[in-house]
Image (cartoon, rainbow, N blue to C red; front, top):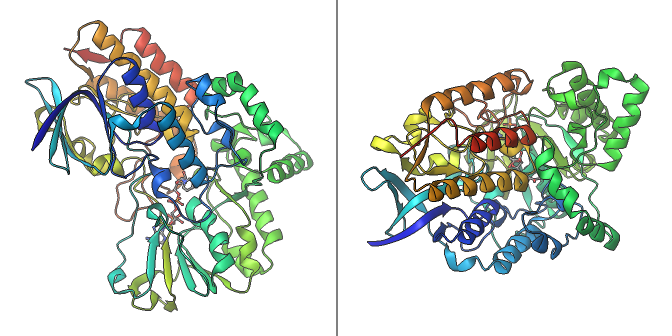
Length: 532
Ligand code: N01
């Protein structure tokens, strides 16, 4: 066993880990980033499925902390594809010379806080112990894949893939019968691409979802130059908007408009494409009437696009739009007009098991050569809970969070009994309701400032007080309960995974307001924390 000492250890070399490393290294700290993959990128390293793209407009999906770095990069398309985002993160790693401080192909298995030396001891699967004053998680909200434990999957004779762990080489679907399980963002992006090659494609759908048209297109030279010139504005949007991104909005409730005006606005949003269906009327998440107007608009669009009325009806979502992540797709509804694309609802005909030649539903076997699991992630908490992290007195996060969803944090950043441990975009922060690089920059900046405070004041540890956690949890719950979010079973609540405890673990008050709260805590000498 090798023992190494650093000022800070960071888990993960995605957006979060890369920026954290850069920031702390600039502060003069010795930092080690531990990354399971053999390259940088985080979720963008693993999710190589056909059609994988980011649904934030690309010009916002980058770092803004350095004007010089920002101005050296231009995106090709309105929505960046997975290969291009991976290229971007490699570019960042090269520009900032980050690789020497990243240890690839290594997993953090366990970590525990040693109260005698007031440092973390971090154990890896390469038989190393790293000792560090600061321990920071950049594991991401959507990185541990959810593979439903269907019986018999090991007996299947064909190929099986999960969208979140796609092979590096191209998967050829030509002439094959393909079953896709799951129609979230990943399934919706992958299916039109798979349909281009497959002999037969069958979607096994548990819940119909709302899919807005992406309207992706190449960015012109002028678009790219404009994005570079607009640096200040884009940087500003990271901290002054609820989602860390500028979105089209009327700024009013749908109820303030006539039916004709609503139709005209929603048509505009549908044709310009993207996530604006979720921002056009800001009360969509709290006002059932507004919500119905937008939801019905999408259902009508499905009826217009899908020729077979029975299939169209099957595709009608019936939950409050945006209470599950709005999906952005390209020609998704259109594929159901093709003869070789089938749609089967699992509602009254669930999956019973996987068999050697396909998927056995209650009403019969769907024979296939390939099964694609687009079944999502153990969202929000799954990646942290996979690591055995023990704070003071051996308390683990599992103990603290009661098996995962009874989350207790202060600001979604820190926890009582876990001194000097920080979570970048942790549960109970705005995280997945924002443009992720915005939330990541805000968290990394806050953690860096906090570490500066500790170092300047010769403090050994900072730790959330129990009362602060309780107040923060109540604030998050009260906010969530004033919205429509908790009415829907989704990965936001953990309901995507059978048997998992339910709990809504996101701060819904907007990144702009959240930043003000975090800054105020810091300005008030870290009120709500204890020090040693
Ligand atoms: O995962 P999901 P995803 N039997 O959880 C179904 C981000 N992302 O990978 O809805 C049968 O949304 C499940 O059914 P149901 C983005 O934030 C972003 O697609 O739970 N079906 C659902 O249909 C996104 O929201 C991008 O009833 C089962 C699907 O599988 C998040 O990641 C691209 C099942 C899972 O959908 C997750 O997206 C990709 C079972 N046992 C991902 N278990 C972009 O930036 C699950 N399902 C665009």
